[in-house]
Image (cartoon, rainbow, N blue to C red):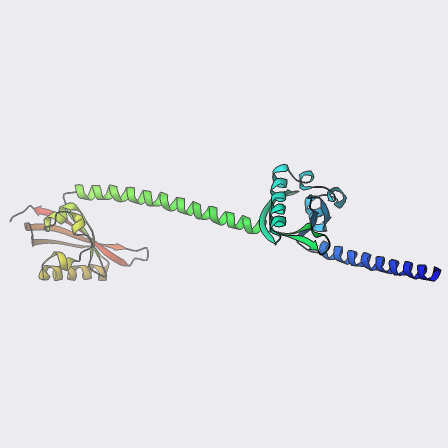
Length: 284
């Protein structure tokens, strides 16, 4: 009997030592993880926390173990953490959530995996959480969204300013006694004209002219004449000044014409602004 009892004692001590070594190895593994890892019982009391949890929270493990979230965090934060715990326990499956908690250096956002722990004897007996700090990623994403909103706001402001200036310019050009049109280099398309010009060539409004080529608005011979002048201005990059007599849809006009190249910042002409003053009003 004594021998049997001694053997049982040795077996128990050996088993106890193995358990202690296993627990120590597990704790070492948890403590060296960059993630926050913890286990709570079904009442929400902390059973285990790793070094990262204690370090970030600025608490000794003894001050956390056996406590609930309400004793560690502000009540609003604790309620969110507990609600996520309950959701994972009810579903019985892993749950992923973003959780924000206040630490010593401010608020942090964690991507948390929560899952129930169970065994064949007790069923579900605890919940484990593994939380990875994604605060930097969230901050970058927040700043990106803020930058996009600021860019959108600036674009809207710029568009409003451009619209305002364009409206003012159109009012000015429509008020002038001159005939004004802008012709694109590549297509010979009239991208802009004032109302006076449109009516002089037989259109009711300038909108009826804009978008048409000079070949659609004038006779073939006169359109070719205009194209030659335009090519000359595009090639030279210099203003062309001439006096001309032309037959338009509404009569014959003696015009003092300036054709001015509109240039990009690299000094490449992309369009021509033609401004004609009726030197001797309608002779038709």
